[in-house]
Length: 186
Image 1 (tube, rainbow, N blue to C red):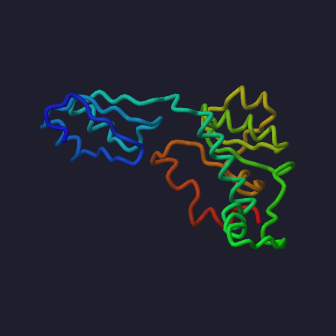
Image 2: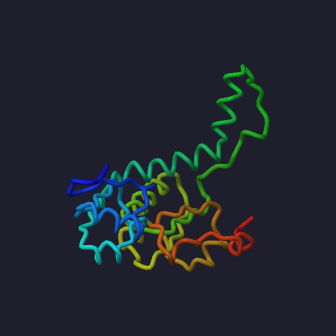
């Protein structure tokens, strides 16, 4: 479908590896436009070698992404899917299986404090969380929110909840792995 067009538009799950870029180049495509903030699924070296311009949306709704992350936390913590199913079945029993935990006062880690991570930290402060952060570039804004930058090891040991808010790169790919799981706070 790309033949005869100057640009193709890819989304977050689309892959633009060297073989795909070679094919697109042979079709005359000159630009890869990403409909997401990251470009970790584009082989940027191959794109440069084939003369592609790669564009992305760096401020792709950072508030919506941070808010959605909190929504996922609350859904898992408060077992919303299970509770919803019970209500649909007219099962209104109360038991400890649906309680979850208070987020207030918990130690929450944010690994990756770019724009989305900064917004997430601000939201979490509203819940009364203690914030631990990790990033290769520390944010003064996050520090002003009262967060403390610590090592990955300290995050694993002390955090009740961990958010991964960083791009998927070779150095971040296995941030949580089988080797890390035993190190996590119980």
